[in-house]
Image (tube, rainbow, N blue to C red; front, side, top):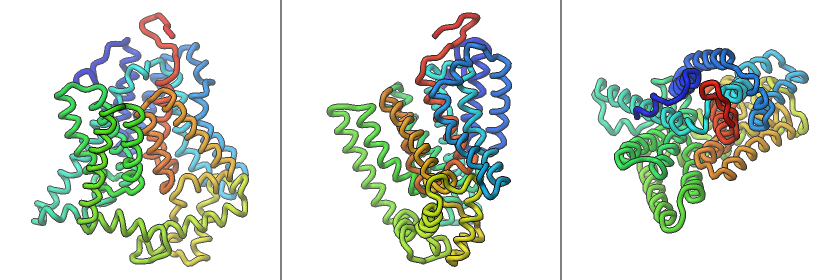
Amino acid sequence: MKSLFIIDDNMANKISYYHLACFCIALPFDFFYSQLVLISFALHTLIHLKQSRFRLFADKNTLIPITIFLLGLLTIFYSSDKTEGLNIAGRQSAIFIIPVLLALNPLDLSTYKLPLLKIFALTCTAVILYLYADAVHTLVYFHLPLSTLFTTAFINHNFSLPVAMHATYLSMYAAFALLTFLYVIIKESSRNEKIFFSFCSCLLFSGIVQLTSRAVFGGMLLIIPVGVSFFLLNGKKRIVFLSISGVIAVTSFFIITKIDAFKTRYVSELKNDLTQTAINNEILEPRVARWQLAFDLVKKSPVIGYGAGSEKELLKQKYFDNKLYISYLEEFNEHSQYLSFLLRAGVIGLCLYLFVLYYGFSVAVKNKDFLFFSFMALIATVSVSENILDLNKGIFFYSFFFSFFLTGNQPQIFYRGNQATF
């Protein structure tokens, strides 16, 4: 663990590394801390900026992640609500800023990629451990039985409430942390580290189940067998791993169906959320109904959409006209990043987003990078049911790690002392 915080490099690169380490640590917490670290990192990068780094600014690995931000800016020009469009652009500015900073900063990300990911994963583990400790403290304080931990009072958003983070985004962070530990256990760690990281992985998996994000949980069921089999294992080890994974998946599903709160969240609510059935306030207006209304809007402007910021009022009017009053009052968005691009920028926007995802997957597969592939799969999966690029936690997660992996997989100019190497 000591090697995570003590590195052998020049002073400027050490400071850059500690900035990124602090950024990874701050991600699961209040947005203020991530923003503060990012500002400090930007100032540090500008102070130590080398002219030769500017060539990386025009590199495709820098430009491709920011194209969706630039397209969003263009759509503001024909938006009916330019003020809201500018607010969205302000929140999404990290999609532009972070790739540029990582390209201009001379730190060798290919060398420090795994240590930084371990720091992020350990932070997520500590957060999940804290949430369980807080839940148990609540049970003890109110003299409640331990079984109460597996009721609706302690799952989903109620579980993540102490850190004031949306359950889906925290679950996504935890899933990526678990996949990082899985990679380390298979490829990198010693025997003692394998034991420790295995414990961390079990804790994270438990937290993911507790957070009950169906998109993340489903994504993991796809990523682990496909990703590990393709990138990390072969032969008999692959068969053994797939067998163990299958047993764990079946066991998990069995346990979920035996606990009422989990069964309701994972099975019943999923079924009702994708139909017109109404059983309580949350799914009285199921997600599929909102998707249908969004598609109705897309049909009227399929090529260029309505512009960033317009969809909020357009959807509200649709909700009101179709008597989806809860969605109207709560100002629900589309709950799908793919639909969001269709509404804001039409088919052009959706095709651009799909191309960006394709590019990330292609680089991951080309370099046989399991962690990059896992990250892209999480983004693609969660984008089905969440506007991942509308909230700061999703924006920072996407913009940082996407550029982090792309920059770490390309030849760069690195400075050690006063000499430049390629």
